[in-house]
Amino acid sequence: MTELQPVAWEAVATELAVMTGGAAKELGWEPKFDRVTANAELVYAHFPQIGCVGVLLERATGRVHVLGSANPAEAYIWAYYRGFDISGGNRLVITAVHDIEPTIEILKLAFRAPYVRHELAPRFATPPVTVELHAHGLHSMLRELRETTAFEFEANPQ
Image (cartoon, rainbow, N blue to C red; front, side, top):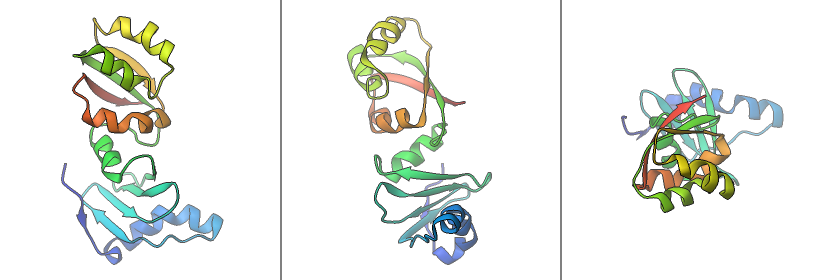
């Protein structure tokens, strides 16, 4: 992963137009980006908007992700490079569990407690354990996934 570096918005003006094209046409809304960073794979444009920390463009595909305010942009970029589809569904594959209770607590951020305790936890002794994780579930546990040492995991977008 190459770190995103500051760039002048003029250098990525065409890509920024792609990132906002739908909203600008439909709503007559044109965001004013106050910070733009990029590398060979991604363009991130920050703009101060309620409920959003900016937009992320995958240069190879042209896919645009609107990043919710639940996490900082760096968390979404980390998730992208870990293999998560940050706007869609994923399979979270738990490959090893080192500490059961913290693992349960993290998973409860995205799943109902009875499901985690009664269906997932008994399977922790014999990984891998695969769970379907929608974008909202990923966003609700992203910070903890970045920091955890309680379990190891892989991401497999659906």
